Image 1: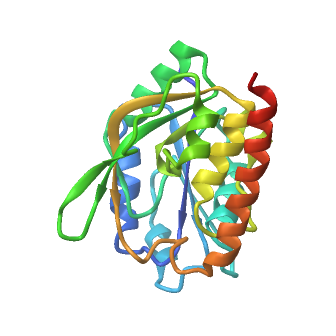
Image 2: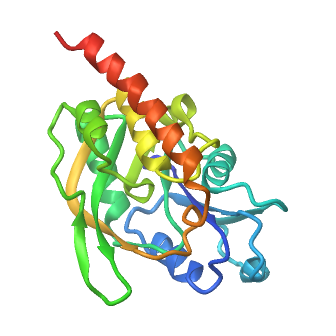
Length: 235
């Protein structure tokens, strides 16, 4: 049997959008998965969605104080049983073959983390492919120091990557960029150049309405540290 993939979905006040998100994960062609939904103290009745949950693959975790997306993702990963981890955003949708294609590439290349492309979709229906600039094979750290090229919902990784890196709970935005930089320092990353995620561009994100100051400071800290490491390692 294929490895169990644990999909962690942090959510905050997404009662209307969360069902479609979960459905896109459960519809994956990859057969062996579980879903951990982590409710970051929603106030819109999100918990009612799980009163009649009959799918044993879906697990719901809730706590009382809003702590942000990084805390929710780390807590979900702690509850995960799988040796492979993926993270999804509660307002986004996955293509049915996302996990299978990423798992196949992860296995074929022996990489530690695979990230794919996605379509960023605006409210008016317009969209663009992300990342805008194609990554360079074998230069993940250099690429991520230049700009962010991955989002959490595009990542599939061995559990060991998350255990070593984890999401920095002191920052509230650009957590994906910070995580990718630190992962690229220590692990092998591989890019799948195909849009396998439909990502909604909106202002109600779990990490959108926050004070940006600690975000910038946290990301700049990782960038400075990683830049120094890259310069040291580069002849």
